[in-house]
Amino acid sequence: MLLLVVALIVPALGARPGFTDTGTIEWRDCGVGDSLVSVKQFDISPTPLKLPGDITVSFDGTISHDIADQITLDVLMEKKLLGTFIRAPCQGNVGTCHYTDPCHFLNTFKQLGTCPPQLTAKSLPCTCLFRPMKLHLPPSTFTVTCINNVFWKTVLNDGEFHVKITMNDKRTNQLRGCVEIYLVIDE
Image 1 (cartoon, rainbow, N blue to C red):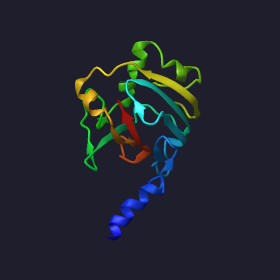
Image 2: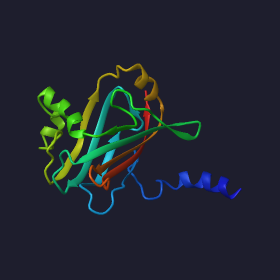
Image 3: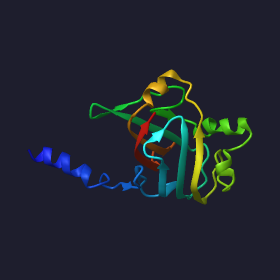
């Protein structure tokens, strides 16, 4: 009976413990110690997100050390189904993926010739080498024009999602940065 009461009351109290509730997402910087990247503020809107469609993103943070090929990146993406979060597989470099060379993955922007204009307007990098700097992106709109992959069209329709992104040192496997979010997507 106590578990039922807790299960009904906790969602009414707001954000999950340790998370910031912006009204559109719940997020936390889950890094420890000497993180290469720390996040102070983060938000995505509207609520729920509509894909395809316009997404407004804002954040503040810090890159404290040079970041290049010394890290790995892990993305955990889960969708809530029947009350339980189920892991989305890695499909086309999207989903629950391990990137042994995230700089290589980001080179897509170099091939396109530029970073998104919302980032370049604020002198924010999107490819390696990342130098120490303060990060500030005021509310900026990005347009997702279409989702071509049939698998992702199915996964990203209506639902609650949990995403956790971690950076680890390649040599020591030490956690060097982490951000975790909960959000709702609607088609």
